[in-house]
Image 1 (spheres, rainbow, N blue to C red):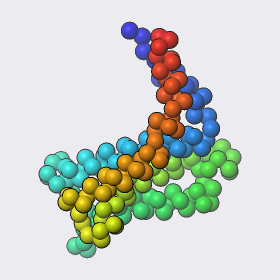
Image 2 (image 1 turned 60 degrees about the vertical axis):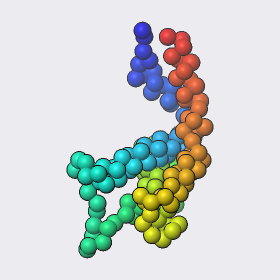
Image 3 (image 1 turned 90 degrees about the horizontal axis):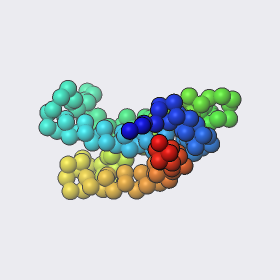
Image 4 (image 1 turned 90 degrees about the vertical axis):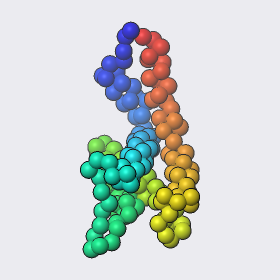
Amino acid sequence: MRRISAHRVAELYRSELADPRRERLFLSSVAFFSAFAATRGITHAIRHRVGPFRNVALGGHHVHHLVFGIAGLLGSGYLWLVQVGTGRRGHDDVLSGATSLIYGAASAVTLDEFALWLNLEDVYWAKQGRESVDAVVFFGALLSMGLWGHPFFRALVREARRL
């Protein structure tokens, strides 16, 4: 059975996601779903005392992970305000990708604790914690890897069928 080479995948990525806006949306959605899965995995590991993960505390206060998400959103937003990574300041493809990844991941980490900001209490493991998952699903649908990455995925499938 023949496989698609990494070089060919890179070619398809460049051709199908040539529009910088489409690529930023695609990268943001990949980071969003990846960060959400990682965050949920880590929080479950912390709760069950598995692996090296522990809660973060500062001065005896638990630091919720939405703090890191908000910092990422503020940082990526500021960079975009000064047009770093927007494609408007010359050839900043790497910065464009980096800020898109930061935005997507920070959005997921923040929305994973949506129920905390909605209820103003830590309900992560309670029934109301489901509100966070609903918020993630809703926002994830807006970013939607399938929608923004559709031409790239369609080209990959076409390529796989050719083989």
